[in-house]
Image 1: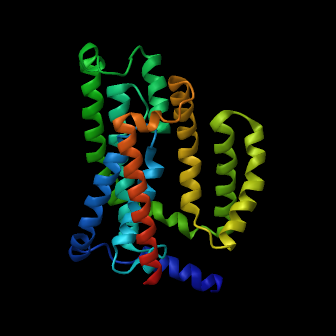
Image 2 (image 1 turned 60 degrees about the vertical axis):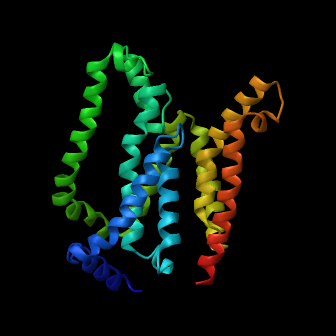
Length: 272
Protein backbone atom coordinates (compact mmCIF):
# COMPACT_ATOMS: atom_id res chain seq x y z
CA UNK A 1 0.00 0.00 0.00
CA UNK A 2 1.32 3.41 -0.96
CA UNK A 3 1.88 6.13 1.64
CA UNK A 4 -0.93 8.33 0.27
CA UNK A 5 -3.39 5.44 0.30
CA UNK A 6 -2.37 4.54 3.84
CA UNK A 7 -2.91 8.13 5.07
CA UNK A 8 -6.28 8.26 3.31
CA UNK A 9 -7.33 4.99 4.99
CA UNK A 10 -6.32 6.30 8.42
CA UNK A 11 -8.30 9.52 7.94
CA UNK A 12 -11.29 7.54 6.69
CA UNK A 13 -11.24 5.43 9.85
CA UNK A 14 -11.11 8.53 12.01
CA UNK A 15 -14.13 9.94 10.19
CA UNK A 16 -16.19 6.76 10.48
CA UNK A 17 -19.57 7.22 12.23
CA UNK A 18 -19.64 6.38 15.96
CA UNK A 19 -20.77 2.98 17.21
CA UNK A 20 -24.53 2.68 16.77
CA UNK A 21 -27.04 1.04 19.09
CA UNK A 22 -27.02 -2.30 17.29
CA UNK A 23 -23.22 -2.54 17.47
CA UNK A 24 -23.26 -1.59 21.15
CA UNK A 25 -25.76 -4.36 21.94
CA UNK A 26 -23.58 -6.79 19.97
CA UNK A 27 -20.50 -5.73 21.97
CA UNK A 28 -22.23 -5.84 25.37
CA UNK A 29 -21.66 -9.59 26.04
CA UNK A 30 -17.95 -9.19 25.22
CA UNK A 31 -17.66 -6.14 27.49
CA UNK A 32 -19.43 -7.86 30.40
CA UNK A 33 -17.42 -11.08 29.98
CA UNK A 34 -14.09 -9.20 29.80
CA UNK A 35 -15.06 -7.06 32.79
CA UNK A 36 -15.85 -10.16 34.86
CA UNK A 37 -12.63 -11.95 33.85
CA UNK A 38 -10.47 -8.88 34.54
CA UNK A 39 -12.12 -8.21 37.88
CA UNK A 40 -11.19 -11.72 39.04
CA UNK A 41 -7.65 -11.57 37.62
CA UNK A 42 -7.09 -8.03 38.92
CA UNK A 43 -7.96 -9.18 42.44
CA UNK A 44 -5.20 -11.81 42.25
CA UNK A 45 -2.05 -10.42 43.89
CA UNK A 46 0.66 -9.73 41.33
CA UNK A 47 -1.32 -10.68 38.23
CA UNK A 48 -1.79 -7.14 36.89
CA UNK A 49 -3.45 -5.64 33.84
CA UNK A 50 -1.25 -7.32 31.23
CA UNK A 51 -2.47 -10.80 32.12
CA UNK A 52 -6.12 -9.65 32.31
CA UNK A 53 -6.01 -8.00 28.89
CA UNK A 54 -4.41 -10.99 27.15
CA UNK A 55 -6.82 -13.49 28.76
CA UNK A 56 -9.87 -11.33 27.95
CA UNK A 57 -8.74 -10.76 24.37
CA UNK A 58 -8.01 -14.44 23.85
CA UNK A 59 -11.41 -15.44 25.26
CA UNK A 60 -13.17 -12.90 23.02
CA UNK A 61 -11.27 -14.27 20.01
CA UNK A 62 -12.01 -17.88 20.98
CA UNK A 63 -15.76 -17.29 21.32
CA UNK A 64 -16.08 -15.01 18.26
CA UNK A 65 -17.92 -16.22 15.15
CA UNK A 66 -15.21 -14.67 12.96
CA UNK A 67 -11.90 -14.99 14.90
CA UNK A 68 -9.94 -14.19 11.74
CA UNK A 69 -11.04 -10.54 12.08
CA UNK A 70 -9.10 -10.17 15.34
CA UNK A 71 -5.86 -8.27 14.87
CA UNK A 72 -7.42 -6.35 11.97
CA UNK A 73 -9.48 -3.80 13.88
CA UNK A 74 -12.26 -6.04 15.19
CA UNK A 75 -14.62 -4.08 17.46
CA UNK A 76 -14.95 -7.05 19.79
CA UNK A 77 -11.18 -7.31 20.14
CA UNK A 78 -10.94 -3.62 21.03
CA UNK A 79 -13.89 -3.87 23.42
CA UNK A 80 -12.36 -6.89 25.17
CA UNK A 81 -8.95 -5.26 25.66
CA UNK A 82 -10.26 -1.86 26.74
CA UNK A 83 -12.99 -3.12 29.09
CA UNK A 84 -10.48 -5.43 30.78
CA UNK A 85 -8.02 -2.55 31.04
CA UNK A 86 -10.63 -0.45 32.87
CA UNK A 87 -11.94 -3.27 35.09
CA UNK A 88 -8.54 -4.36 36.38
CA UNK A 89 -7.70 -0.90 37.78
CA UNK A 90 -10.30 -1.06 40.53
CA UNK A 91 -9.97 -4.76 41.32
CA UNK A 92 -6.16 -4.47 41.65
CA UNK A 93 -6.87 -2.27 44.69
CA UNK A 94 -8.59 -5.18 46.48
CA UNK A 95 -5.43 -7.10 47.51
CA UNK A 96 -3.63 -3.83 48.19
CA UNK A 97 -6.20 -2.43 50.62
CA UNK A 98 -7.21 -5.72 52.27
CA UNK A 99 -3.92 -7.66 52.38
CA UNK A 100 -1.26 -5.03 51.76
CA UNK A 101 -0.17 -6.90 48.62
CA UNK A 102 0.01 -4.88 45.38
CA UNK A 103 -2.08 -6.25 42.51
CA UNK A 104 0.18 -4.78 39.80
CA UNK A 105 3.04 -2.34 39.22
CA UNK A 106 0.85 0.74 39.70
CA UNK A 107 -0.54 -0.45 43.04
CA UNK A 108 3.02 -1.32 44.10
CA UNK A 109 3.86 2.38 43.69
CA UNK A 110 0.67 3.23 45.61
CA UNK A 111 1.77 0.92 48.42
CA UNK A 112 4.99 2.91 48.77
CA UNK A 113 3.00 6.18 48.76
CA UNK A 114 0.63 4.86 51.46
CA UNK A 115 3.50 3.78 53.70
CA UNK A 116 5.21 7.14 53.14
CA UNK A 117 2.10 8.87 54.48
CA UNK A 118 1.73 6.57 57.47
CA UNK A 119 -0.96 4.28 55.99
CA UNK A 120 -0.35 0.56 56.42
CA UNK A 121 -2.59 -1.36 53.99
CA UNK A 122 -4.25 -4.43 55.45
CA UNK A 123 -7.39 -5.51 57.32
CA UNK A 124 -6.95 -2.86 60.04
CA UNK A 125 -6.80 -0.06 57.48
CA UNK A 126 -10.62 -0.12 57.27
CA UNK A 127 -10.92 0.52 61.01
CA UNK A 128 -7.83 2.57 61.93
CA UNK A 129 -7.97 4.81 58.83
CA UNK A 130 -11.59 4.32 57.76
CA UNK A 131 -12.12 7.90 56.55
CA UNK A 132 -9.13 7.89 54.20
CA UNK A 133 -9.83 4.32 53.01
CA UNK A 134 -13.42 4.98 52.02
CA UNK A 135 -12.38 8.30 50.48
CA UNK A 136 -10.07 6.33 48.17
CA UNK A 137 -12.91 3.97 47.21
CA UNK A 138 -15.33 6.85 46.55
CA UNK A 139 -12.60 8.63 44.58
CA UNK A 140 -12.21 5.61 42.29
CA UNK A 141 -15.96 5.63 41.62
CA UNK A 142 -15.90 9.35 40.79
CA UNK A 143 -12.89 8.86 38.50
CA UNK A 144 -14.75 6.22 36.50
CA UNK A 145 -17.75 8.52 36.13
CA UNK A 146 -15.54 11.40 34.94
CA UNK A 147 -13.80 9.12 32.42
CA UNK A 148 -17.01 8.79 30.39
CA UNK A 149 -17.31 12.45 29.29
CA UNK A 150 -13.54 12.66 28.82
CA UNK A 151 -13.60 9.65 26.51
CA UNK A 152 -16.74 10.87 24.77
CA UNK A 153 -15.39 14.30 23.83
CA UNK A 154 -11.63 13.81 23.54
CA UNK A 155 -11.12 10.31 22.09
CA UNK A 156 -11.43 11.51 18.48
CA UNK A 157 -8.85 14.26 19.01
CA UNK A 158 -6.40 11.98 20.81
CA UNK A 159 -6.80 9.24 18.17
CA UNK A 160 -5.35 11.57 15.54
CA UNK A 161 -1.93 10.56 16.82
CA UNK A 162 -2.12 7.68 14.31
CA UNK A 163 -1.88 10.28 11.53
CA UNK A 164 1.70 10.94 12.57
CA UNK A 165 4.21 9.59 10.02
CA UNK A 166 5.47 6.19 11.10
CA UNK A 167 9.05 7.50 10.98
CA UNK A 168 8.24 9.91 13.82
CA UNK A 169 5.93 7.55 15.73
CA UNK A 170 8.45 4.71 15.54
CA UNK A 171 11.24 6.88 16.93
CA UNK A 172 9.00 8.04 19.80
CA UNK A 173 8.11 4.44 20.65
CA UNK A 174 11.80 3.46 20.70
CA UNK A 175 12.63 6.41 22.98
CA UNK A 176 9.87 5.47 25.42
CA UNK A 177 11.05 1.85 25.40
CA UNK A 178 14.56 2.90 26.43
CA UNK A 179 13.19 5.37 28.98
CA UNK A 180 10.90 2.70 30.46
CA UNK A 181 13.74 0.18 30.73
CA UNK A 182 15.92 2.69 32.58
CA UNK A 183 13.07 3.93 34.83
CA UNK A 184 12.26 0.35 35.88
CA UNK A 185 15.48 -0.11 37.83
CA UNK A 186 17.77 2.84 37.08
CA UNK A 187 20.25 0.37 35.59
CA UNK A 188 21.74 1.32 32.21
CA UNK A 189 22.47 -2.35 31.46
CA UNK A 190 18.74 -2.96 30.99
CA UNK A 191 18.74 -0.33 28.26
CA UNK A 192 21.51 -2.24 26.47
CA UNK A 193 19.41 -5.42 26.55
CA UNK A 194 16.66 -3.79 24.48
CA UNK A 195 18.54 -4.04 21.16
CA UNK A 196 19.27 -7.83 21.20
CA UNK A 197 15.81 -8.56 22.65
CA UNK A 198 14.18 -6.45 19.94
CA UNK A 199 16.10 -8.41 17.29
CA UNK A 200 15.00 -11.72 18.83
CA UNK A 201 11.41 -10.48 19.00
CA UNK A 202 11.49 -9.48 15.33
CA UNK A 203 12.94 -12.85 14.38
CA UNK A 204 10.14 -14.63 16.27
CA UNK A 205 7.63 -12.40 14.48
CA UNK A 206 9.08 -13.43 11.10
CA UNK A 207 8.84 -17.08 12.17
CA UNK A 208 5.16 -16.53 13.04
CA UNK A 209 5.54 -17.11 16.78
CA UNK A 210 2.79 -15.69 18.99
CA UNK A 211 4.04 -12.75 21.08
CA UNK A 212 1.34 -13.11 23.77
CA UNK A 213 2.74 -16.25 25.51
CA UNK A 214 6.20 -14.66 25.56
CA UNK A 215 4.86 -11.49 27.17
CA UNK A 216 2.84 -13.52 29.70
CA UNK A 217 6.00 -15.43 30.56
CA UNK A 218 7.92 -12.20 31.09
CA UNK A 219 5.13 -10.82 33.30
CA UNK A 220 4.46 -13.95 35.35
CA UNK A 221 8.04 -15.31 35.45
CA UNK A 222 9.38 -13.12 38.29
CA UNK A 223 6.15 -13.60 40.29
CA UNK A 224 6.35 -17.39 39.99
CA UNK A 225 10.07 -17.40 40.83
CA UNK A 226 9.66 -15.37 44.03
CA UNK A 227 6.72 -17.42 45.30
CA UNK A 228 8.34 -20.74 44.37
CA UNK A 229 11.47 -19.78 46.33
CA UNK A 230 9.31 -18.76 49.29
CA UNK A 231 7.48 -22.11 49.18
CA UNK A 232 10.76 -24.03 49.06
CA UNK A 233 12.06 -22.16 52.12
CA UNK A 234 8.87 -22.88 54.07
CA UNK A 235 8.83 -26.58 53.08
CA UNK A 236 12.63 -27.01 53.36
CA UNK A 237 12.93 -28.07 49.74
CA UNK A 238 10.00 -30.49 49.69
CA UNK A 239 8.32 -30.27 46.25
CA UNK A 240 5.33 -32.25 47.52
CA UNK A 241 4.17 -29.17 49.44
CA UNK A 242 2.17 -28.15 46.35
CA UNK A 243 0.24 -31.45 46.47
CA UNK A 244 -0.14 -31.81 50.24
CA UNK A 245 -2.05 -28.55 50.65
CA UNK A 246 -5.65 -28.80 49.34
CA UNK A 247 -5.77 -25.26 47.92
CA UNK A 248 -2.49 -25.49 45.97
CA UNK A 249 -3.37 -28.99 44.74
CA UNK A 250 -6.77 -27.77 43.52
CA UNK A 251 -5.11 -24.83 41.73
CA UNK A 252 -2.67 -27.17 39.98
CA UNK A 253 -5.50 -29.44 38.82
CA UNK A 254 -7.49 -26.44 37.53
CA UNK A 255 -4.36 -25.16 35.74
CA UNK A 256 -3.88 -28.52 33.97
CA UNK A 257 -7.56 -28.66 32.96
CA UNK A 258 -7.53 -25.09 31.66
CA UNK A 259 -4.30 -25.69 29.73
CA UNK A 260 -5.85 -28.72 28.04
CA UNK A 261 -9.01 -26.73 27.21
CA UNK A 262 -7.00 -23.83 25.78
CA UNK A 263 -4.96 -26.18 23.58
CA UNK A 264 -8.17 -27.74 22.31
CA UNK A 265 -9.72 -24.31 21.68
CA UNK A 266 -6.65 -23.12 19.77
CA UNK A 267 -6.80 -26.18 17.51
CA UNK A 268 -10.47 -25.44 16.83
CA UNK A 269 -9.69 -21.82 15.92
CA UNK A 270 -6.93 -22.88 13.49
CA UNK A 271 -9.33 -25.18 11.68
CA UNK A 272 -11.74 -22.29 10.98
